[in-house]
Structures are given as C-alpha cells and as structure tokens.
Image (cartoon, rainbow, N blue to C red):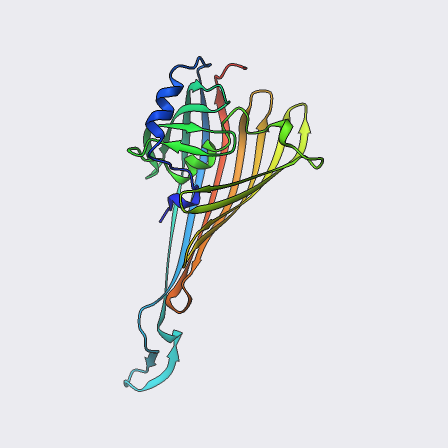
Length: 253
C-alpha cells in the first residue's frame, strides 16, 4: 500500500559511491530518538465489470441498477513506537550519513538502514534495506543545512523544485515563527508522477525545528496520495505521521 513515490527519494545506483566518499569526512557522532505514530487509510474504486450491476429481490426479480460496475474497497494500517537515528558522518556540503531504524509496537519494524540526507530534502538509502514512508518523513529534514538563511526571501520562504526518477517535486517552506532558534516551519509539497495515469501526492507538514542544533524536534504530516484512471476507477490513500523528539545525544556543531 505504501509507495516509494510518496517520498521520491531512492536513487539506487549512486548510493555506494556516496557513502564510500562520506567515510573520509570527520563528523560528530550522536543518536536521535523519536516517538512516532503512523496511520494509512486507503479507498479504492475499481470497475470490476463492463456491465451495470443489478440488484435483485428475494424472488430473483431485478430491482435497480447499482454502481455501474464499480466496486469499492478500503483498508487501514496503524502503528506507533520509536524511531532511532544514529549519525555516522557529516559531509562537507552539510549532508549527513545516518543509520535509521524503526521499532513499531505491531508491524512497522525495520532494522538499521544507511542513508545519505541532503539539505534540499533529497534522501538516498541502501536499496537492500527496508525504509518505511514515515522514516523518509523524518530523514528529509535531518541535514544540517535544511534551513539555510541565505535561501530565504523577504517572507522567510524558500522553495525546492527537483525531478527524482519519474517524479516532479515542488515544495514550499515558510518559517512561521522563530523564538531564539526554536522555529515553526510549514511545508506544502506536491509530488507528481510523470506520464499517463499519474499518481499525485499532496503533503502538508508542520515542523518544529531547533536551528541551534539543526534538528527537527517535531513533525506533523498529512498527505493525500491519489490517482484517477477514469472509467477504470480511482485510488486515494491518506497518510498521517507524527514525530516527537524524545532523546538527543548529538553534539553541537
């Protein structure tokens, strides 16, 4: 049910070269631990028949036409637990090499995976490891230069536009408040799959951010992912993710 296009961040071919280069950099080590909650609700309308579906009564008589051959399906997935990020290396460009893992109470459990995180929210992870959607939600805000004062306009706004694999990504960020480095940042992000029958994801996120430590302290994300296949049906999935920093052993850099 969860699509990697939602995060648009996995570039497999260059992962080994990037992490190998990072080993030469000297960096602070540390561990971040977050409490997370995750919910996904999916609704699918699919044409199961080219003919109208007709209802019958107890005597077998036709009574009405129903749904024009369209059936509806749905499902939900919920979990909560902790997410652990071990910072391995810091690169000269501000990107981080990290190991991330997830310990859900029920089914969302993933062993440590190595990832490279960039200030433009771009993330590259080990293609041989499981990295869940909610882990990517956190990862994209972890680079030290995620908030770059030189990129802000007069309204404390900046924009990131990029093409990753088959996705076009546009993200707008605004610093809504700043209390001595304790920031509240709003994100509006759209990911559109190129080509026919494209999948679109609209994301609205509230980010608590400590600029002095360059770490997100909280994340509240609401995302809608949908595709419209015309007469064949449609699919919509709503993702809700919350993250709260509960432990931080990172050194100030």
